Length: 346
Ligand code: PMV
Image (cartoon, rainbow, N blue to C red; front, side):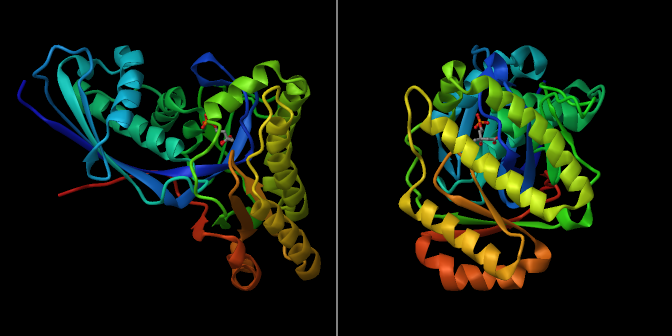
């Protein structure tokens, strides 16, 4: 068994419009979520399998942006150990992974989504190569399932543009175990821009894991979970109908609700910074004056994602340059994208 196998994938990150916040073990979400998969913000994962020379159950060497990274190695080894039964090749082979992000750290772009998305894709690919058989059922759905087991929101990243994760009444095929693509989308929402205004690039003070856990005893948990589930179905209809005003309203309310959950947890905390509020108020003002359907969302951090259809790009860029750029440390221009790509290397 001297053979080596290679797999190389690029997986984008995503930004949730309806937010996943609260979970049960194994990343089973307490509520459904719906997101936009990005284009420019991605992780490349290059994996090589070669015959194992050690007796460890999982032998992983992990290199991030050219350097051995023990923190990532420990995190991904734990994941592989937990799911080794699904990837029998881990018994006989050692795995070397080289990954790199297209975006800087702590910018409000979920690197765990693109990293676990990428890892799941290479694992599914290596499974097929080593077993000499196709994965039964839907390939991307399987990758989404394994991405979820690493980081919940990652399961949405394996699909292009709009994806739903979590069971809702309005979407009979939806599941808590994997995401599914939302394909029926009005032209208004087919070419969305996401411009990320990095107002603070310090690492997060409270991890998402800790934030999710605070929802277990949150006084508003139940009504929040119900609200999010019905908003996912509502957003699916909005995406179909092309109603930009309804999209703006739902998107901003979701962002503020997520942060309201943090502020009203037993161990309350506040992730918005003064410039987050300043930018939000400038967006309200600009929307009112220009009539352009631009809106913001926030991840679990202080940075602003500005969302708008491509046709308004010229006006919005002028607004960013003239009004918002002073409030941001850096600006990343991203957009909805086509999902992961396999990279064929020579
Ligand atoms: O996938 P996690 O555990 O990093 O949680 C993500 C939580 C949010 O980004 C705040 C919302 C979401 O749905 O992506």
